[in-house]
Image 1 (spheres, rainbow, N blue to C red):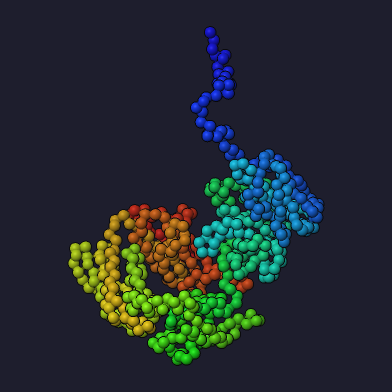
Image 2 (cartoon, rainbow, N blue to C red):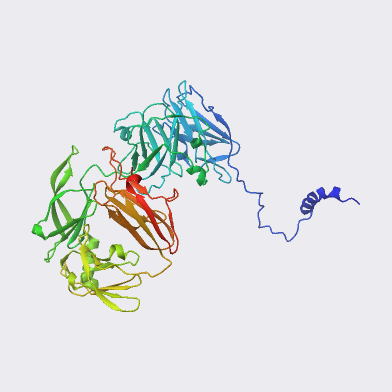
Amino acid sequence: MNLKKFLPLIPAALILGSLMFPSGCANTTTPPTGGPKDTIPPVLVNVSPLPGSVNVPVHKTRIRFTFDEYVKIKDANGVFLSPPLEKKPKAVIKGKTVEVTFESDLDTNTTYTLDLTGAIADNNEGNDFQGFTLVFSTGSQIDSMCMTGIVQDCNTLKPIKGATVLLYKDHSDSAVFLQRPVAAARTDDWGFFSIRNIKDTLYRVYAIQDANNNNIYEPDNETVAFLDSLFRPDICYNDSIYEFKKFNMKDTSLCLARNAQVELNLFRERPSKQLIVKKERVGLRTAYLTFMAPDAVVHSLRVRGLPADRIISQFNPRRDSLEIWINDQRRMPDTLHLVVNYDKTDTLGVLQPTTETVKLALDKETRAALARSRRDLKHEDTIAVVTTNAEASTIEQYGFRFEFKYPLIEAAWDSLTLRMVNPRQQESWGTFTVTRDSTNLRCYTVMPDEPFQSGYDYYLKMPHRLFRDINGFYNDSTELKVTLPNDDKLGSITLELSGVNNKYIVDLLNEKRDKILRSYIIDHNCSLLFPYLKAGKYCIRLTEDVNRNNIVDTGVLLDHRQPEKVRFFKVDDKFLLNVLERAEMVWQINLEEMFR
């Protein structure tokens, strides 16, 4: 008997049999699987008006995108119109169609692009629609030029997703503060942007992180970038240009292969006005003032009822925060009246010497804390508190660090002792140099005069009652111990720097570029050693310190001043340096070429 002809009927018979004779012990709690998961994104099947349409009505304009399945609006901000109107487009779902409308009339004789990248997904599984850009004109022709670029953070050079790039035909400095642009685009996951179908003309180019999506720069709460010179597009758009294709953002190689014509570095501007914005009394003899802008200029300080020489003050490195201490043992009142003469911005925007009296009152919490400390005295309430730091991996660069809670009025640094123990447990004594931090008068560095040696134990001891702070309290004794690594698995990086014709800040960063592990400031050709590195990935960041103030300065838009230039050292065109176990890596860097 030939059974082959019955084989195709077997699956159907089994399904029919299960329906006719259900099992009494079937698991009724397990839902049907519903078949394989849908992984196919929506497909656009119709657009109205058609791409490239001209003479599109400016009043009550409706744009319709119809898909092959039901979809949802995943991100309303992904529906992006260029040039933008005062209010964002409105998108609603009607069956399988997304309908986009505008609350105001479109401009006449204008080429528009309406982009849906990242805005649409299917209704069931959430598969993202890859994106589509519709171009149409309310006039008789379509503008044809285009441009590309990248937006990145000025300090980390990391790409900025979701930044808004703005083009202006008005070249005045005020345009970005007051007007909407004549063309705009959003950056993708890689900080990349492409603007198509724009006029052949000269543009001012900006980028902002648009906090309220109004396409206007608001310096108080937004970052900004600008191109130094006017930009004229020199490429005519066509569908075959690689940079204008829709890419899967997870495809690194394809996304990085795109060419960026311009590079924009986002920075947060320093405020344009100078005034005291915050004051706080944080202790009986301690307070601070915060200024709106950096580089505050204070001509004089005094507290009513006290001699002016009883005040100790210190700015932070950016000079926008001032710490104040009172070096006087008499009882302090609950409210101090601080008379400050400083350069303040007047109503005309000009800095003028101004005298203000600032009331520094102890708040309820501080008063209660002081009352508790007097009632329940702890040991740390009766001593000159000092924090210490000495890390084996950075001791050769930073030495032993001492930071007192309050400024010192008596110090006996020659009373410290430095004891060294070699791997054979033989002791010796060393000399050292003490340096007060130029930016923190409460902080001191102790550095041995002889080079550190691998495998040695170093003991630095501070005896008690030889250091006295402004409260009249003396220090406790303390001893710091550091053992220099003797692990042959650790690696190192040596940078041989040439072409150093300015001041530079050289930072060793972690893999994510969000933490400084070591830092040097240089102004001449030299070699820098970064020892005791665990195997892993690191970055080398170099910043050109143009004004030689030892900090990385931001830009000023109205002065056409960019933030100080940052470069990352690359190996094989990659930021990350892979340090292996036991590796002693040496690289030559010519800074003149790098910053050219």
